[in-house]
Each structure stands twice: as C-alpha cells, then as structure tokens.
Image 1 (cartoon, rainbow over the protein chains, first blue to last red):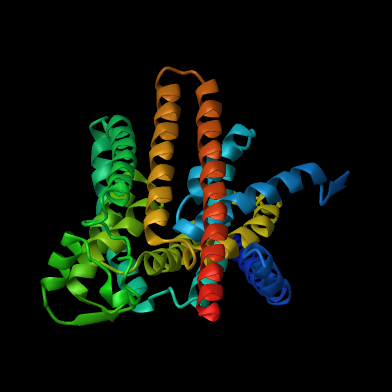
Image 2: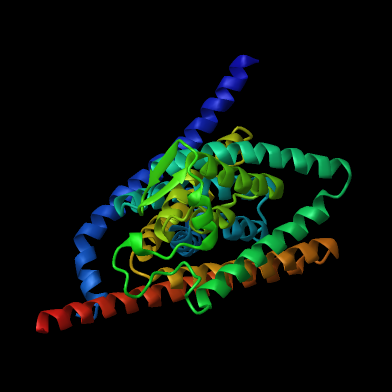
Amino acid sequence: MLGVESAVATRAGVVIGAVLVEALSLYVGYGALERVAGPWLTRKLEGR
Amino acid sequence: MELFGVAVSLLGTFAGFGLLVGLLFGFFGMGGSFLVTPALLVMGYETDVAVASGLAFVFGTSVIATLKHRDLGQVDYKLGVSMIVGTTAGIEVGKIGLHWLQRVGLANVVVNVSYVALLGGIGVFITHRALGDGSGGFGPDEDAEVSDDRELPPIAQKIQSYRIPPMLELRGGVVVSLWMVLFVAFATGLLSGFLGVGGGFIRMPALFYLVGVPVPVAVGTDLFEIVFSGGIGSFLYALDGAVDLTIVVPLLSGSALGARLGAAATSVVEEDDIQVYFGVMLLLGAVAVAIRQIGGVIDVPVLDTVALVVIVGAALLVSGAIVVSSVRELRADERTDAGRAAD
C-alpha cells in the first residue's frame, strides 16, 4: 500500500516538476528575448 | 491539425488567454483563479480538472512573475515568509469555521454572500480612495521622489506605531512589528480559508493598506507567497491525477510573457493608476461572481457563460488600460528626459 502511495506521490511530483521546469525555462527564454529585443521595443514605445 | 493530441487552434487559444491572464497576474498578483477555472468549466472540462489545472497554471505563472519582481527588487522575503506562517494558521482556522457552517447547513449562502460583498467592498474602497482628492490615499506625492516620503494610510501608520519586538525592517523603509505582520497575515488567511479562495485580492491590499509597504512590493511579495500556496495546492490535486498538462503547458507559454510585461509595468505605471485598475477589476469580478452564484441558485447554466463574458471582458479592458498607461508613462518620461537634456 505504501508502494502505491509512493508511486502516486512520485507521479504528482513529476507533473508539478514539469510545470516548474517549463516556468523556469520560459523565464530564462523570454529573459534572453527581452535582453535582445527589449531596448528596441522600449525605444519604439517611447516614441523615439 | 493536432500537436500532442490537441488541436493547434486550441493550443493557440490557450496561449493567447494565458498572455492576458499573465499580464494581470504579474501586474496585480491576483486574478488567475478568477479567470482560468471558470473558463475551463465553460469549455466543458470536469470540475476537478479545471480547478487542479487552474491551480497548477497559477503556480507556474507565480514562479515567473515572482522572479521578474525579484529582478526589479520588489520581493520582500522576510515579509513573505512571515506572511506564509500567519496565512497558513489563518487558513486552518478559517476552514474550521467553514466546516461548522457546513454542519449547520449555511455554508453556501454565507460564503457566497461574503465573497461577493468582500470583493465588491474592497473594490469600492480602493477605487474610491484612489479616485479621491489624493490627500488620504496611498498614491505617491507628486513632489516626492523617494519611497520614504510616501503618505502612509492611517491604519498602516497605527499598525507601524506598535513597537513590539522583534521589529522587521522591510523594503520601502518600512519598520513594523513581526507580531503585527503575523496578525494581518492571520486575518487574511482566515478570510481566504473561510471563502476557499487563493486570497490574492485580500492579501495585496492588506500589504499596502495595513502593513504599509509600497504597492509594487505588495504585489511582488504576494506573488512570492502564491508560489508556495499554489505549489502545495496543485501537488495535492496532482495526487488525484487531476492536473492536465495539455491545458497547463500552452497557458503557461502565453502567461510567461504576460507576467513579465505585467511585472515590468508595475515599475512604470503610477501607484494611483494601479489602485484604480485593481479596484475596477475587483468590482467587475464581484459582478461576475454574483451572476454565477445567482445562476447556480436559480439553476440557469447560461449565467455561467454570462459571468465568464463579464470577467474576460473586464480582463481585456483592464489589461488594455495597463498597456496604454505604461506606454503613456514611458513617453512622458522620455519627454522629461529630452527636456532636461535641452536645458
């Protein structure tokens, strides 16, 4: 019974871990995009 | 055309919806469960899948938004950890009150009426103060250049006047007793547990009206707390296999961008404007929740869709206002800089 509970907890941990990994990857990915395109976009928004 | 067994058009819709929710979440530190769970329910998902996937999405978005607020120096970890302790205790006591109401058969009525009243009440209070003459509001003084010169709301002044050690020194030059922070956190947790909601709409105003931290720090610290509550909550739902990654993954891909933009906008938009948008969002949220509850009582399911249209319309309206306000502030700053350079 403990084995089943452990397997369920592991599966839940993997699902939430996947969400966390995706969130961190997107944070890093969009961060890199912001560094590259951010200054250009800011200038455009400022009307320069 | 399908990707991972899901239509590409549906994935695109989720990503676009995620962008909208992420923008509001990064800007206000609330709104995820308002929007995502009802939308999934209207789309025909089972209740447990809608709630669990909504919670997992809120967890992912709060991680991204918290990291962005941290980059901007808007997360106070001491305050966040103290709030988590007090909120957790409050939620447990709130749940006891809810169970007692369930035993006497009054839970639905009391919780629904309290939820709408609280949402609407906080919305009216914040909007009224922010739109007032500014003398008693929390908005920045036009002449004040540093955060220490902010005009504190009277309740925050009173709470900060109790010097019961240990004292916490928080961002924005705020010094407040740990016991006062725990008390505020307990009270917000009590309401959150009693109403069975995430509580961002209670915690964020409590942090700036009661504890007295600046609005951007209140948003960042609230999001920090949601990382833990959202993570634990979605893990508990995932134990039942209710989290659907085909919903969460595309939503998160859109919200990651929205959360960055929303968080960045808090450092551009005036605090007064943030409060007005927050108040309007809460008021329209109260209307939507009231419509949904009435639909449940009189058994008219179409009112669920009407409620969703109201809340998504409000989200579009408020997020549009945030974007316009941000661009306006950026252009005003640019004109000021150009004027200084010309002098």
